[in-house]
Image (cartoon, rainbow, N blue to C red; front, side, top):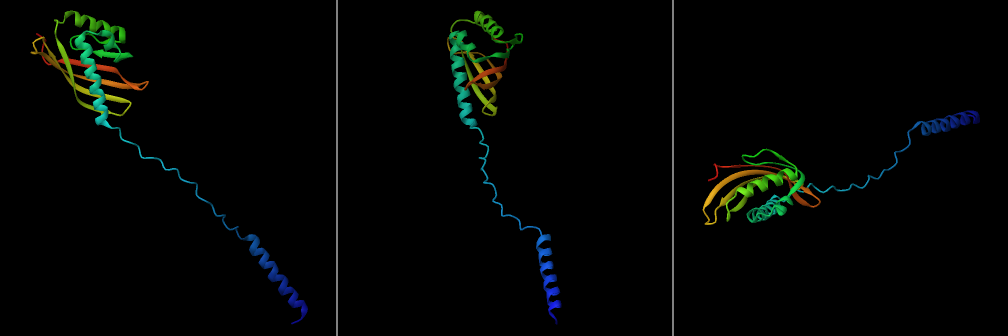
Length: 174
């Protein structure tokens, strides 16, 4: 072979090599996966602790009701609360709810006590629906009425306040 053929073959090989390198896609850059931030699993609310907290509120409510302490009772309600008491019209807002309490307490015989028992709760840590029962006793400790209720509590400014409640007596009070 002569030098001219070697030159053509060498040129062709170099051209083919350059063409192959130029036309091939670049090697993918090695990418580092972004660091995954582990999202903690959603924590289920501690319903037993919430139920105990609501029962504590109901115990304080019962003590205030028994004492006729309307100011303390009103502290349990949100300003925009709605109350539907047994045998009473719907009371919207604290002023209307307070009037219902004042009317009810004016008719109540002296020495009566009331207790509230939380039977069930459901919801989440911000909004709780409570189902419970009431027992009212006279000064001698005799049960004069019992009833049931539902209350919806919302956590506002770190504490539960009642936003809705409905109650009824099991039978007409004596």
